[in-house]
Image (cartoon, rainbow, N blue to C red; front, side):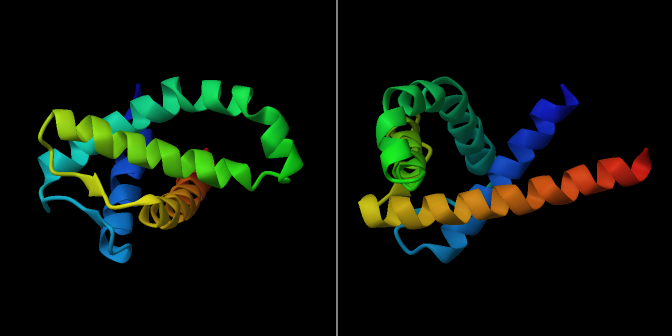
Length: 124
């Protein structure tokens, strides 16, 4: 359970950074919206992304993994679409903003995950 909560916080921080850096990604600047959007993003990544990666595996191999960036952008865009049903105010304006946001979210998630793992090893 601790790992799930930590992953949720990392997603929330990564989405917040993307909202600050990418002009086409916007949301109200409150914790509830950010937490709900991070939960939706986590569910989309956990449930839909693996299926999509399996279906597009030949394309991922053909592009040497670069198509994964397109999949990440689609997951961010899908999160925006689902958040619209809950009136969260999270929006991604276009595919370019989704791709840039996916890059930012991926980099921030990797960096934060690396720091968390490093701290866990230091405590052992």
